[in-house]
Length: 353
Image (cartoon, rainbow, N blue to C red; front, side, top):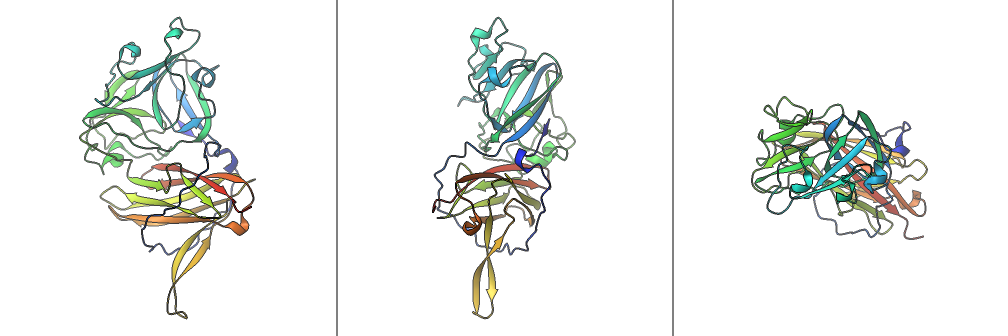
């Protein structure tokens, strides 16, 4: 399974790497945006299916959510989504069995099937795993917008989950889950030729982009992966002439993690951003704040390795004097040297016009 870059960022852009002073104080930003991010920048996820059952992780919110329309013309006849009940997930060892008889599953059956009337899955959304049954080999290309990943682990149970990872360059299961005592084990199952097989050696088996699997959560957990990147609002980063936002990075492992941030934009509607940096002003005899400007259409910024258990913040503000009118959308791509990826939607508005 492979991910394409955002449509509007397919051209090659010159990347500037400003020298930044990242010794900034960590504090909470109170600004909350009020715009909808539903019309965000589009990207395409490529999903390769083999005949029979496939366990996939959909990383984006499709433009079309109705499964009948989404899978129209594709050799897909059954799609199942799991909604974990409070009492814990039920590990489905045999997806060929009737999923409707298994508690917690919603299923869509293709209209051509005789059991289509049993359909109770009405919409497909992103940041969720699915079981997909294909009748032949196929490659799906699903277009949509960034779906924010929010881990919601059910304690003391198997969880049906997936994560965004690089392709190629994804981490092993051990590299990904090493930082969490609740998941650092081999109680992991991945679907192989229609059969769930245990990952006996997590240090040797590599995760795959777009893959879903079962993993047991021992106790409570909020673990999102080795590098946690959190925006200042639940809908992403909201920027306006009245205020900015920030992204907080947390190293959830016991070793340093290096990472970089890429700003993916629509070239026709760029979003110029800046970050405040504290510098010593010898003439004034103290610290002063300067704004480091990034390219409006695209930039890529590397960061020093973040020490184990440490956090840092990246404050971002709309460069109002260079921003155009109206609401604009972009995406921050946060990638780590472990092969993890986090996408954060950005919405910017000149609300002073």
